[in-house]
Amino acid sequence: MSFIRDPRVTVFPDEQTAARVVAVRLANALQDKPDLVFGLATGRTPIALYDELARVTISRNLDWSAATTFNLDEFVGLGPEDPGSYRRFMQEHLFRHTNLRPERINFLVGNADPDAECDRYERTIAAAGGIDIQILGIGTNGHIGFNEPAPGLEARTHRVTLTIETRRSNAALFGGRLEQVPAEALSMGMATILQARTLILLAHGERKAQCVAALVNGPLTTELPASFLQLHGDVDLILDTAAASSLTL
Ligand code: F6R
Image (cartoon, rainbow, N blue to C red; front, side, top):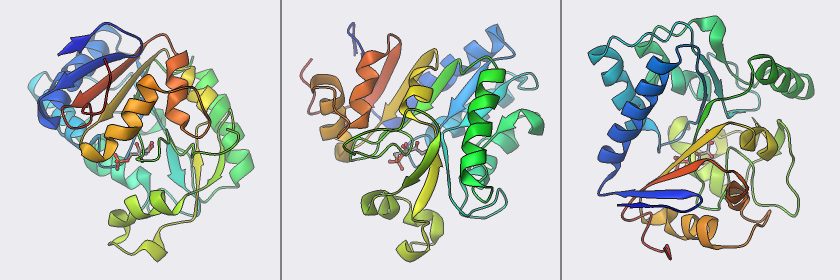
């Protein structure tokens, strides 16, 4: 089911079908523009998408060698080789299945000096010509990247304190031990994210239904950072029926 509105909402019967359709779209985009700049997300949501992308990479013999990637966020204190780092997550789920050149994989380095690292990241995104397609998930509290609900939002890449809810959702990366989940992260800011030319947000499951509905139907508010996606002219929300269940369309 597809609805012409802004953001565009497409509802799939299940997560797997949604992942397949988005993977084909990304593969087509890469074939049309081999030097595409991807913005990528971590978390449970994009795992099926990355599995499908790995499959389509093999079946079409996709060439990623001219492509560039930027991930949204990383935990403060964790180096790229740390097993709990998002850099390792991406290696495992996507990068190792592609011929992406290591120097074209861009990541916030969690154990670098935070302020200098955030500046470096903004400059690197600008030098790459900006992000063509940004993949997003959404937190159950409406966060995007690690832009958590707050009275004000940071526009640019910055250091954030994670909410307990966000740390809990990431505990699986740390063997289920909440106390091991870093308390802080570095994250692209909302302006950085909104400057990507195309945004594709994936959400599945009942737990995401309320924040997806607030993103689409609610007012713009820093207490639901995802609501700012309404300001972007090219956003696709890719949902399963459960995540779409509270929407008024
Ligand atoms: C991670 C990120 C986060 C997640 C969100 C949803 O890079 O950007 O905003 O997308 O926390 O996480 P999952 O997919 O685990 O529900």
